[in-house]
Image 1 (cartoon, rainbow, N blue to C red):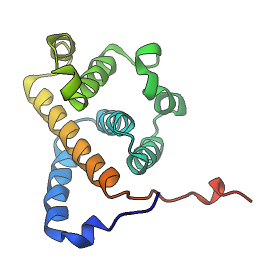
Image 2 (image 1 turned 135 degrees about the vertical axis):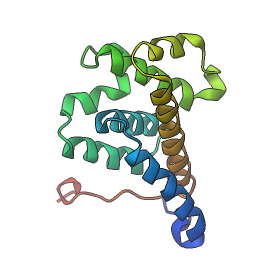
Image 3 (image 1 turned 180 degrees about the vertical axis):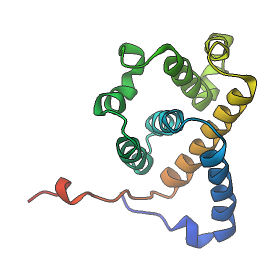
Length: 153
C-alpha cells in the first residue's frame, strides 16, 4: 500500500481545524485511560493501521498493560475490562458503526450508569474525532512508521 498524498500539506487549514478538535479532546477532562480506550478501539474497527500503531504505543507509554491493549479487539470476551470500560467500549462500537447499529438504547443505558451527561457528550466527541482521523489516515493511506525491531534481518 502506498500513500496517496500528504493530506496535511494538501490542505493545511483542514489539518489545523482537525488539530483544534484534537486539542479539545486532549484537554476536555476525560481520563487518559478512557481516551486511549476510545481511540484504540475505534481505530481497530476502522482498520486504521496508522492509528492502531500510534494509540497502542501511547497506551503502553501511559502505563496500560499489554493485556489491556491486546485484548481490546475482543473486549466482550475478556474480563480484563471493568463494567465502566465495557459500557464505554460498547458505546464506541455502536457510535463508530452507526450505519449498522443506529446506536440503540441497549448501548446507551449502561453508559448512563457510569458517566454524566456532560461526560457522555465529551466521550461522543472523542469518538467522532478519532473517526475523522481514521478516515483521513485510511483514505489517504498514511503509513505508520516501522519500528527498527520489527524489520526483518
